[in-house]
Image 1 (cartoon, rainbow, N blue to C red):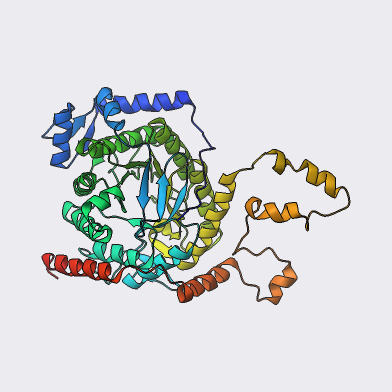
Image 2 (tube, rainbow, N blue to C red):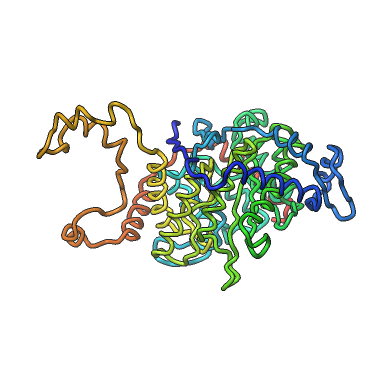
Length: 483
């Protein structure tokens, strides 16, 4: 399937000299302080590679030569495949893809209720995202309260696959659970070798700021590296809390955390696909809360995009998060601002782009639809303005002349669909027309659209035999957890 792939990277806020300084400061921190690696196998990988390892404190000091040599082994681009292997996202260059919000514990549903998420919401939200053209990846949108914590990684992945052909998350918290998702994906693909050729699991590791790589997530990352499934390394460092208050200082620390994480994947299996990521933000000094909707997030995305390119790595950003508790003006302005900044940064994959409330603690059906529209507008902005002899339209202007209209010309008919953003949600009619049709605000229109999609949209069906085999595997594995 041909995916519409907007291209970002137009916005840069750091000079080359700035990037060199951040790199130099990163190297100094990795050599002077080092990073704490809580996972013994990863610790041994660093020791065998020549890093200075203190096994008592689990601190690893990394020389610049080893850092550069190891990071160079990571691919500069890779492809991520959907449940349907014909659905492909190209993590390359400055191509931008949008994903939904992830792992919300609460759902703002279509009846206006805020409630705990259920497994049914997982399927319904995946089916909704499957139909929304600007959402390229279906994240694990809900943590289902009606499934045991030990099992929901398997149930959610299967539910996403059943309801969408698009790319989906993996799960790499702890080795056993990571291996279970690998086993499920190998059933889906028809074997481990096919899975390695066409990876469909995207793992996620948050280094623990400041300067730690956590045991359980690294265990899973090592499993994913073994099978060449892509891995994100994205700290949620908080300026003034778990990182220096200055954004430059945060970027240095984040860079050290990301690069040391990527090194683990590359030392384990050179050529493992990785994404240089960020979820970093400022700590709100008034409340002690994370300001995931703040302007600092946009700045950090742009700078992180530049740093990812500096090292020749594909990139993962965070844009679309809102700290608002409801669908209001705050939700709109925070989402639109940071989604645009992440897009302009050329982030290959933008996590939390669509549906977020409360910093992704909650997800909204209506906001998923509204943010899909914002993603479409961002995509149009990223498309820029094509300047050619034809688009300059000198002949067209002279032909139409003064006191006439371009509305009915063949030139307009040929170009307007590509040049103009054609909204399916926003109201641009007169006040009289709007009043006559019920004076619905954008939330009401989004609610109607969501209900219509859920009533009518049928995703490309998953093979029944494969579905049954994966469900049988889940049933078998559930017994090992005592269920």
